[in-house]
Every structure is written in structure tokens, then in C-alpha cells.
Image (cartoon, rainbow, N blue to C red; front, side, top):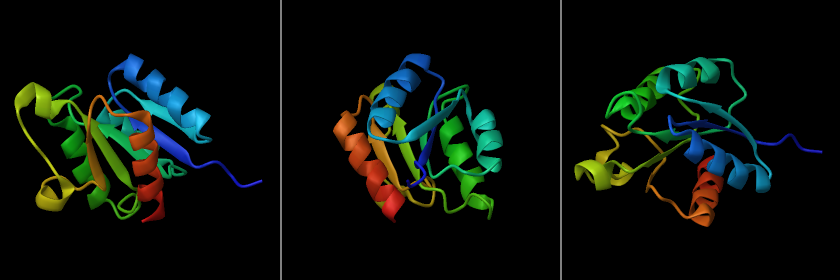
Amino acid sequence: MAKKKTILVVDDDPDFVEATRVVLETAGYAVESAPNGKAGLKRLAKGGVDCLVLDVMMTGDTEGVHTAEEIRANPATAKVPIVMLTGISQKMGFAFSPETDAEYLPVNVFLEKPVDPDVLLDEIAKALNQ
């Protein structure tokens, strides 16, 4: 039997983490979580994470962006796909896209919360296959 792909969900909202865990585990993924970027980086450094679901606004308004930058700057984690989920556009009026903002937003895909579970699963599958 093939090993389940491990998805690390980095988000400070425990309700979002739990709902996302249910969606991902139902789809056959192993799920781990971290409540902030620092804890996410620590877990990522241990290895075995196949994809990261990362929030933008946690302890700071742009914590997720800085976390993504650190991930990409580290050769050991640079290739881990990042699916960024956030409500920043609704809360602060920012609109980001990896196609136009890749220099500042080093992620594979950027999705607005709330995200449809099927869209999230599709984007994770695409990110894992890139």
C-alpha cells in the first residue's frame, strides 16, 4: 500500500484547521497542523511533508508570506508545494496572485477563504503533481 501524502496545515484558527483536517483526511491524506509560521517551519524541517496549506494572517498580518519566503530560501524545503489560503483580500483589500506576485508571494496557488473543499482538494492535487 502506498504511503499517504502528508499535508501540513499552518493556521491559527483551530476551527479552520479541524474542518480542513476532516476534508483532507476524508480524501486520503495524512494531516498535521501548526498554529503559526514558526511552528510550521519547525515541523517542516523534520521532513516528510508533501504539501503545505498556509494562512497569511496569523500572529502578524503577513506572517504567512514571510513563512513562505523562508521555506523557499531553504534548499531543504524549497520544493515543498505551498497552497496559501487567506481572507486577507476581504479584510484588508489586497488581491494577490502567484502569476503576478510570485516575487513577493512564493506559493504554488493562492485561494481566498472560505474555500470550497473540492477546489482545495483539486489545488492540492495539482500542487503535488507539479
